Image (cartoon, rainbow, N blue to C red; front, side, top):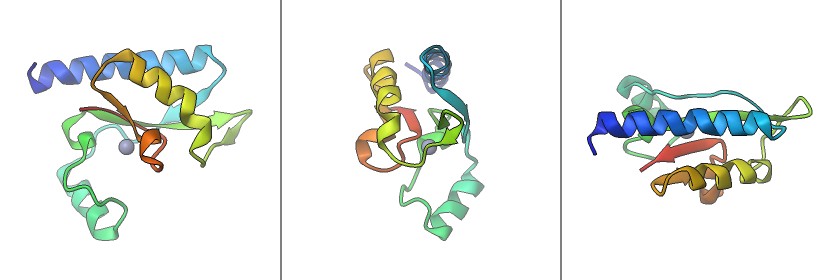
Length: 109
Ligand SMILES: [Zn+2]
C-alpha cells in the first residue's frame, strides 16, 4: 500500500470514528491532524514530544478533543471507548490511549 493509499484509508476511518462518536453520545472537536516538519521541530525543542517523527507529519494521525456533558476531558479513561472503536476499524490502527498518555491521539501505523 502506498503512503497516499494509506492516507486515504486513515482519513476515511478517522471520519467513521467521528461519526461513531457523535452517534454514541460523545462530543468531539478537531485537534491536530497534519503537522508540518517545522512545527514538529518546534515541538521537539519545546519538549512537548519525544518522537523523532510523528504520524501527524505523514497525515496518518489525528487528535480529537472529547467533551462529555459539555466538559472537556483531560484524563485518559473517558477516551477508552473511542480507542476501542478506533482499533476495530483497521488492524493497523493504534490509539494513544494505550500509551497511557496522549489519549486523544489516533493513528495508523
Ligand atoms: Zn496526536
